[in-house]
Length: 293
Ligand SMILES: NC(=O)c1ccc[n+]([C@@H]2O[C@H](COP(=O)([O-])OP(=O)(O)OC[C@H]3O[C@@H](n4cnc5c(N)ncnc54)[C@H](OP(=O)(O)O)[C@@H]3O)[C@@H](O)[C@H]2O)c1
Image (cartoon, rainbow, N blue to C red):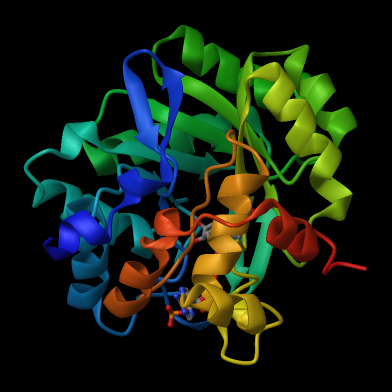
């Protein structure tokens, strides 16, 4: 068996956004491919492009990104990787708009409809595409009514420039309000094995409504993957890494969950993309679910 058979995103199963686009559930997030504080270029741009291309080679066809990563640096690497990849039209891009950057770690939601539209247009130009596969409102901007923000995405969808609309870091009430403005096909909230109870009801609601759930910080920014991780004991039992246990827990939690672990390392990418091989027992799944007090 060669590497791409053992380590492959396809092992985690698939999720259907529509009949034209079935993605492998285990994806990849580009946010680590920037400078410190998600600001500026990654220290080795060629390595950043190589990691994305390696993800494609290992079956990832679902990439989460945003122009605010850098800003634009992660998207530049993604655009380069797509250009150099023969099957780039088969890569589903999950993009986000609605945040400006004020410096390292500085994030400000901006929901002005004209700004959201400009970001979509610039991203389409960057990726040489005529539509966004999945476009998230990165944050709801409380200075604008929901109708203006999600409504602008709906207008872009009606114009054929967005296929699927998502919203990010929302409450159940905000999700229901957004559903009155447009069909919402995905939610992206912070969610991992150590921090899930507050959003368990949203995951279940999304499942019932046929909405994908993208858990950001699936490895709790790497803390769940460290050797002293609270997952180390179970990882030893399965002879896998703590990162694989964290991702296997998400995959078992609900089949509408699409994890998007981020990494700048090919070794960690291979580790993460092996998570689909791990089948947690119901007992271990429950024990992990109860880690959060
Ligand atoms: N919608 C939102 O508001 C929002 C917010 C944050 C993030 N996101 C998305 O979610 C994605 C994932 O979040 P994230 O990248 O910040 O956090 P994460 O996936 O929870 O963790 C990434 C961190 O874990 C390390 N890591 C990854 N795999 C590892 C492994 N197998 N073993 C040991 N360490 C490992 C990485 O370091 P190395 O680089 O050294 O591997 C990095 O420091 C982002 O890329 C982004 O697309 C969305």
